[in-house]
Image (cartoon, rainbow, N blue to C red; front, top):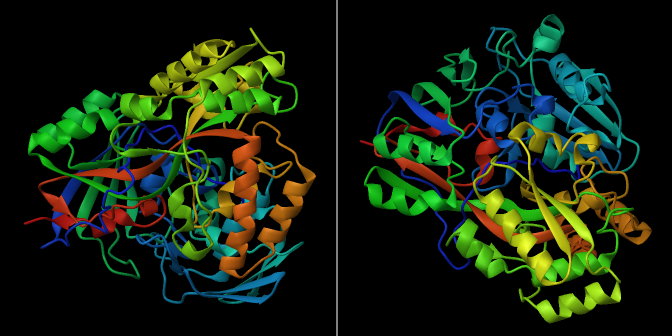
Length: 519
């Protein structure tokens, strides 16, 4: 796929040159239970709509995918013990035997076919439809074999099967529960190391260890996710021990957590960048590339990092994360030097005849950093002769920006912390192809589209990365998104627990199963 999950939760990131943790100490024993704090309650746990941090953070421990994204951000077999690309348009999965759903039923090819085909059902409205845009058919070709046939080659598809698009649920439960699947009323029948327990709306979700799990059993008997929207309150919960841990630690909370003595702050590899999404590249005030370039030149990224993103961020002029190149380091292009040039920006605005032009910047308390980012962008716009309005919207309205074109009407820019769901830079740069679901502003460039097609059809990973490097160069110049900073993952663990991965793998890897007693 050329799409990535998006989200609102704030995150801090270790600065460039800082050592990132490769993991946390292994547990010394099992633990009865632990509590994890999240900035929001999942609106659903249906994997076809799991397009944000709160959903995936929980879902990754209950449901599993055909492939698995490891803590090292590599791919390995998951519910499929083998994936075979028999030709550029035919991918065959051999399904793992002896795997049982939480209901006790045994996993078969029929469950895989039913689960994946839900993404193709327009009535369901999968947020991951871009992953399946090249799919011709998904069929059972044996009791434990599933064949995916493509309209055109798609080298990223198998990588995406380690994320939400590859999730497998019981076909019987999907049919029986219908629209209730993935809700507090309907539940989930999956194969993960935890099964869904009590879901108290507005308060918490409990996961219970699944004794019949096919893999390594969870170290904890129970996990409770609590929902605390206020960043200061989340920090207090971690400091007091009310919660044992949390991902997505806001930059403003890092110093207090470090000095609290309540636990440890860890920084790990991430695939997340802070960007400004341009909502309309066809008729809006930012349709002129000179205005986008001027705004990018005027933004004080270093100042923004200091004021909002903290010591753990690295300013960037490319929308894709550095860590996306970690498996193809030899093909990674040099990043352009980050510099600010207000005078050059003013000249571009004058050249475009845009003095006084108004832009609307949406912001939300979905992340504590967003208001600071939006105000900084407003100041930059005004400094170069534009008029800028910051419009505050509710968290649910902010979330709607990513799925509903009507929600973006009247808004020119909005901030995002955008994460990838596979360790391949094409996943980010492919979404700027004409007509993509996540191409929110409607960027369109025939030459760019042709290069995306070539990259998607290239199964040699390094060669694909070299093609993607050319896409990055175009994106950094044409600015369908205006990049701000590259972010690494930050997590806090209280003294009672250890074992959690430090990387962004927690979105799809069953991370909670690794957590046990620290002493």
